[in-house]
Length: 278
Image 1 (cartoon, rainbow, N blue to C red):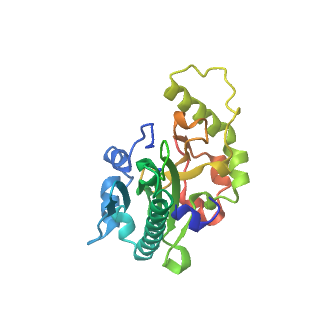
Image 2 (cartoon, rainbow, N blue to C red; image 1 turned 90 degrees about the vertical axis):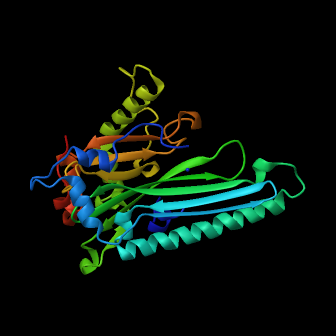
């Protein structure tokens, strides 16, 4: 997850519940008295619509299905929508090419699971503030075998970058460095992950070492959330299956509030976009 291309291109569903931006906005009102939901709707703009693209094909018993989606907020930003379209097209081309290769490779073998292919990448809004739009994506792929897999991606759109033209970046890159983020947040996010695992596995985690097998920042996807629609006040960590533990345990999403220590390691030009969370 080191480059912009990687986090856009290439998915078990997320197994723990978390509040959607819509659910959060229904119960939240900004200082101006405008609900967060109203702010989101105002920022979408007229004529923008969510993108829900699908492409399916059957050849004998071999099947493939491809789906790629993003919300209206992304469609409303033309250069961002163009980036997503390019990434979707590239993923579709590779998906079809890999399916064709599998049909040839297993032509003489009676093995439907060897040739069936699925790809589903869905972007959603994690936070939408005046300057920053934060998106996360889950990407399910099945390329034969016993099961598919889900990985996560994140994207931040800075509306003020490039003289107001906007630019895309990884959310984690608002910090002065990944090492600084890990050094500052390691204890808090390891504890949050341990508690999430305790809930998932229905086990008592009191007294357990939260640092044991806790993944590094480089193994996680970093996403921001906002409780007020104006500033980013929560940081979320996405861990795909295998990152926290075995595949059977599944992926995790766990949150910690933004603290002053975290804001202090945000790059100076972005600090005003953050606030301390609860």
